[in-house]
Image (cartoon, rainbow, N blue to C red; front, side, top):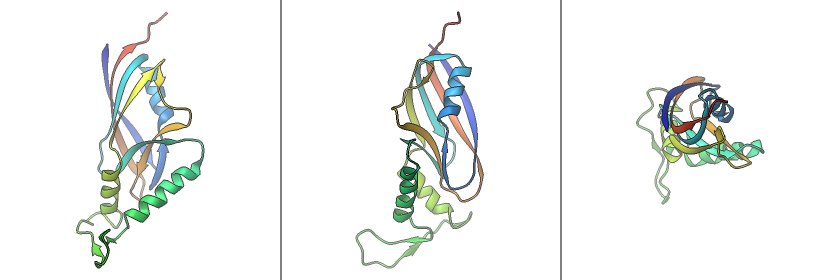
Amino acid sequence: MKQFIANLSIRTEGEGFTNITNILNQWIKDNQIKQGIIILTSKHTSCSLIINENADPRVLEDLSAYMKAIVPETSFKSISGGQKAQKYLHSEEGVDDMPAHIRTTLTCTSLSLSIKDSCLDLGTWQAIYLWEHRYTKKDRFIGLHAIADKASIK
C-alpha cells in the first residue's frame, strides 16, 4: 500500500454543480492506482462535495431549489413559527455569504470512497459533484488522499 496526496483545482462557474467524477478517475489512472480508499476534502466553507444522480439534471435542479427554500438568502424564521425574520449577522462578503456557509454545513465537505480496478467504485447513476454555493466564479481546491495499491506495470 502507498499513500498519494494531492490538491485538485476546480474553477466553478458560480452557484451550481460541477461534476468532478471524470477528473478524479483521471487522477486515479495518472497515479496508476489499482484499488484502495480515497478521501476528498473541500478546502472551503462555502461549497460542498456530494454524491448524487448523474442521469437526470432535474435532480440537481430540485436539490438546488430545495436548499434555497430551507436556507433563504437574507434572513430566516424559526421553524417553530411565530417569530419575525432574523437577518444574518455575517454578510461581509455579500448576500450569498452566510447562506453558503449554512448550505455547506448541511451537506458534506469530505467524502470517502473506494477505488476498484483503477476507478471510483460508484453506482450506475452516481457522480461526484462540487456544489458551489456562492454566486460568482471561484477557484476551489479539493484535497485528495488515497491509500491504495498501485497497478502492476506489465
